[in-house]
Image 1 (cartoon, rainbow over the protein chains, first blue to last red):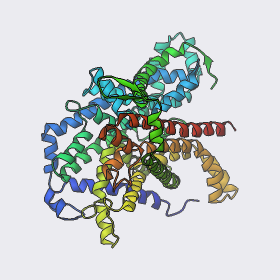
Image 2 (cartoon, rainbow over the protein chains, first blue to last red):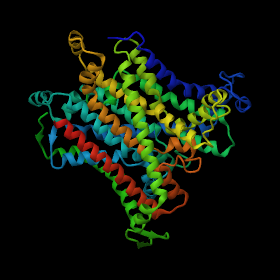
Image 3 (spheres, rainbow over the protein chains, first blue to last red):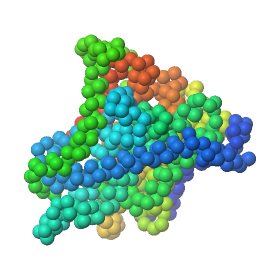
Image 4 (cartoon, helix red, strand yellow):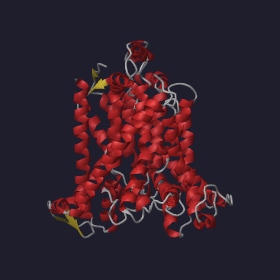
Length: 267
Length: 287
């Protein structure tokens, strides 16, 4: 049944995935002169100058700090409000529950381009423009529905007897929820956090629209540099390579649950 | 699972409701305001009725962008779904290579979208990029900033690179839930490779595949950043998809009325297709 050359397809696929990343990495170690001088597969004059600029210039490294701050705030907000809601959807019937669930999902379908301008006006009006919390709250629009969806999937897999036994043992709802239920679905929470991190980290349109200086994400710093200061490809490549790093670290932590997580806990 | 009736569950949902409604209703109402009215600033509005909607629905520009969008979404689904299934079927099931495969494959999913665009821009540059240089030195005339076909191919290839792993991971999750006994039984019965796929693996993947297609449809229909950074919608308008066109009208030309009307039509198209899909999926599951 197993073909001897079965590994060939995944290997070729991964090779295809790695090529553009390699191109970016290679370019980040080249000097501007070498980049513009023509193509070379390996950097000829290996340099760390591009990385040095990023780690010493505050406009660059602040971009990373800003991005990480709003991503973390968003993850904390999304998961903590989605936990009780997902529990309600997985355990109870209530008036309008199915409609509410579908309405939540429709927000995941809203094109960010549609909301960019109204978001700008809304967050300017309430005085939150150019703050980390504004981006974190705006990203809740698509991250909360997704988190509820994932957590509901994981919670539905846990038999209801667990709840009933705990209540019989005299646990109150908050105590049961924090002491017993949350540890039971820890894997699901990890996966949900991973997804919040992922979608908040990769999104640019809203993050860029809602910030100007103080909370400007690294992705926006990159686009502005690309257009203003000529074409510093090496610097751009170095900044891009560094944005891959947090994702790689986060994937490593959830690698055992990742497949189940992408199936939204519903396998 | 049989759920108990409990109206107090609303209290558990309330925080989610408040946060999402804050982000969804107020901006949506702003869009609706602009869509039906004309404004010259200072919060003074004049009722315009459905003028903007008629204008958008009749304009060739909107039709072209919509057709391009449908073609693009159709193309990437036609490539990513079979490719994703193929890779998932051939992936190792056990052993240390599983983690390696999963981590490497998930990597593109966690790269900021504008970096994906910039990376592919660098990768495809005709003279100094890895892909562009290789193609040109093989004698293929390739320049994605000038040739519409090359720009399309590069944009599609970029999306395949970026998102096929999502399909792979979902299918893999479905496949790994199949017990070994099934395969042994099939082996004893002398089932062919195709029969195993058709009657064991495909049914198990059906549910996750639906999620994969739904997610890929939604996200590709909303795509903005990656093609914008890669091609800027060019050459000409050849890769201007709906979101790119919308941002051009709203922020570039500041035509708020038509932009708002287009936003609503756009959102409704996505909702409609997703709703049809969702209903079909639910009906299928009941059978």
